[in-house]
Length: 401
Image (cartoon, rainbow, N blue to C red; front, side, top):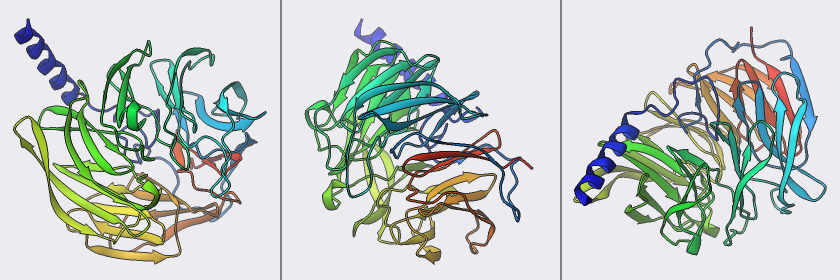
């Protein structure tokens, strides 16, 4: 029986490794999109605007940092109303609220802003969201009816921030301490399937990747980064990574056997080359530098170059060497999206800049003021429409030619 189970497990792992991570889909079902890397398959949008970009709709939904999950003609995000964190489902074309579901009491935070930090995740007719105080909700995506929930008890200083990762039949969350660096639930029933680790929780979303025929998940905790087998939860690597206030928030990036990790304050970033080490993984440091200081915004990777609006500047860095190509000072804390070889940057003051992703330099084709107030949320491009937000207001703009 054990031999049969091992064969079945190997076949499942192989199947997961061969499956494309929804990259061919035009949908944007989760934080950082179908490939978990901030890149979009959209190509037909206009890049060079001299006249005002058409506003399709806008709506005040209350304070949150949640980005958007866009599936079909539905947009999912979070806000605050009547002393509660609220999950919203809106019509993509009109902004009409189709349903809204309070799911956790309001989270107040005076330094950055109130409300939910995580972005909803949509999968097979269900929507998942993690509240800032540790409530994990699975709801019917069509109606908002609750399907199941779980509670975590180790809220970090600035609230739970990682979004839910759907990996195969599992819903995976970074929970922290006794709840696990990573904890996996049956995505349909909410039954706990596995957990691993016990560090204080970080602020990053679990990140999946395939390496040498096996599917893995990275948790960027408050004190380390850990890698576990996606199917079983078996931890195969842990490396210490300490940052001020345990703020490890930026999404890891994996490509061609290399894993990039980065944080802000005075920590910096590093690239590791992975290799098998018997039944575990080993990580050899390729380079480490303070060239990028990603306090809470993440990088996008295009043709071997990392682009990030970090805590100081907008920066372009070579992925394999850490060499800086250029730096635009004071363009900090912006949300980046990569589409059709172009960077779509929403600055923290609400200005949209569209420029070719080019290591030779940064020359915006479009500069347009879309919002006022604090804009720390990554924009989303779906079916030619750009979805943006500040703390309380969401807006939809038409980038179609």
